[in-house]
Image (cartoon, rainbow, N blue to C red; front, side, top):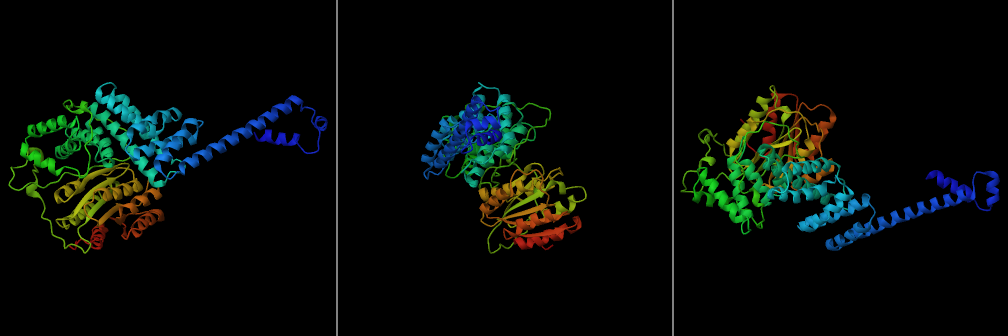
Length: 533
């Protein structure tokens, strides 16, 4: 095109005649000049059309009222030529409907988006959510759903912010898309009886949509079946699903199934009623749940397999550990056989800021044979000095994020979580920081939120950008304390120092496991935990 433009300039010089050009360039014929003129005109038309489309798009995005903005973007998307602006407009329209919980309208625009961009994560999320219901009804094979959801999760890293959408809204859109894709993948794995893989995906979905009856119910079934099942959390989630679906056509069947299973597993109807009350979410509305999952098939053995992992393997809030006064002994699935060995918790004098909601984030690669004893034992001793009111969670990270234990006031569960940490390769530090801070903001009981990070400062293959991490931390209102272990290079040291200083926390650096206990004691004192022995 540049050559055409130059040639057109050559043949259109002022004051020169056509005959003059024939003498200078006899190869330029009348036909050639006509063709070149048409090409130049076409280029000008195309450029003008692109300029008009951009103007129409920006005018639509600039509408103040969300409903008006959605209507204008819909009109633009209908008439726009296939290309980036059309994709942006369709994603923007879908987000406007998702944010107002108008899922039907959002789904209506998912197919046009998939037609323009077949691997678009937003389109695949909505279509997989629709296909999820088809799998539950038996009209679609779960493997097809898993394939679709996996495509979406793989494409999520390539999703870019639509022109004119705020960074905050784009972050929420990504989270919602990730949750829908994870929920669909988890449902597919559940129907294929791979309960372990289903838990990973469904934990991710429930961490974002904790009041989604469909996701909560599916995660409950995954926890109650298969190897390494978690009956305690499974029944708490099942009770929550009963509350979330109450008053819907599916709610009665779920309530009957849940009560029957609980009693069958050794519980009593009175305990179940009390448990329903403890698991009731505040301010939630009943939601429908797919009926096909009410009676899952019995668990079957399945050989271990490598499963594609979602971006985050998050967890949900742990069930309460309290038992009503004068009640019968807890049913077998709730019994803690090691309660007699539970350590005596030393009471901490409450700081002026009140009880603590503490997150402990541990890089698993530091739990090697040489470091393990010093790191784990020191952190366990610190946890023993929390007060009875303080709550804490233990989150580990490598290439994935995994809750060893979600927020609890039970020191025994926290100790077990620390002892279960095994070294793995990888260090998605920014992802881990962003998620841990956001998790504290979502479910922490107290405003005094603290995150203790144990890291070597490396950040490898994180999906979160520094800007996103900073936004999550600022929104969460957490103070971050860092213990840097064998930090090599100035980048890692600067990263941990910046995380702590920007939030009112502190960072300290040690060269080996022998110094870890002193560093932990120092951090504990600064956090308000009386850990001197």
